[in-house]
Length: 163
Image 1: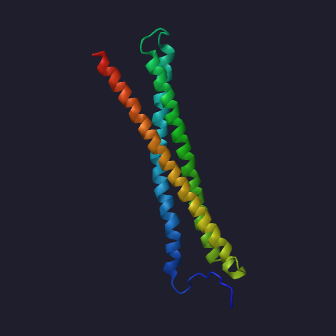
Image 2: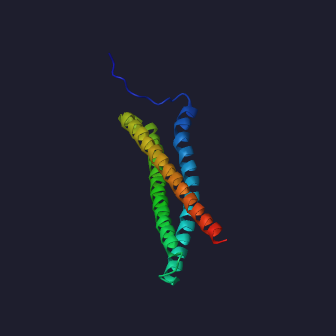
Image 3: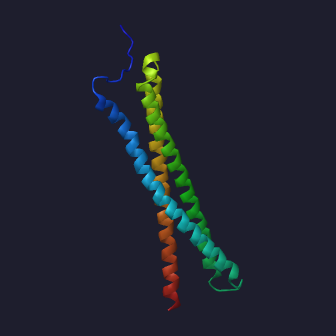
């Protein structure tokens, strides 16, 4: 019995493109998420700096100082969630790019020397890691959104209480 050796479909060039299109689409989707997350990061940093400045200028005996401290702590956690999400999105993009490159190498150069199997494993492994990092980054943004909403509720309650 002959050992199984993965071969690339040479008769249909669209089959190769379909293997490349998956990681390419995931790279594009991750890049869009990354751009939005960078904007969130900038806004969260601005908010944390604003709260820190308000806190530094407030009287230590000011009634609303405890609320500012809680909001600053929450703003720092928001920034942390966003930074972790950004890191996961960067890992995703790198993995998707490496997955695409390994597939291209497998179908062109490595096919001649018998390295197609290794390239296929590398493609699937890096793409799987990229998808996992994409999911983790998205979960981090969901946590950050929830925290942001809690901060907004607290601010609204403070404003309502002052009237």
